[in-house]
Length: 190
Image (cartoon, rainbow, N blue to C red):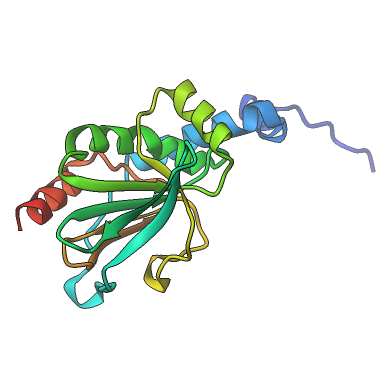
């Protein structure tokens, strides 16, 4: 039996190029960020149903600034809080960061923002500078309460003034969506 020669179709060629680009480290991360950015157009944060909302006891989150200063930030005591766990090497984190920056630009005075990473401060500073992000980024210096612990990044929380976790999202999400802005407006006003 003779072997049939198969011609590559255009779609086969495109798929092959795409796979090759994903294998090459220099092109893999930008492609992953782009794919996550596309995904974000379809997903925005949602409020957790009342019966499934967890209340954390108010606490002081011990963190270190990127300049090495140790500080404590109050969580669950009279102020709405946005907590985000992320990393500079994480494509979904990078994809959602512009939407978090827009949210911070508009709500940074009324919402306590904590973006937490375990990376070296110099790496984070370079990333923020390169991307032109002006966000409150910290390095945690304590174990978070169990309700705020998740192995996946990005994982983001919105906590109301009493310590109730109102939103928890894992994976890239559009934080600049109307839905989350409406949730924040309600929480700030209450």
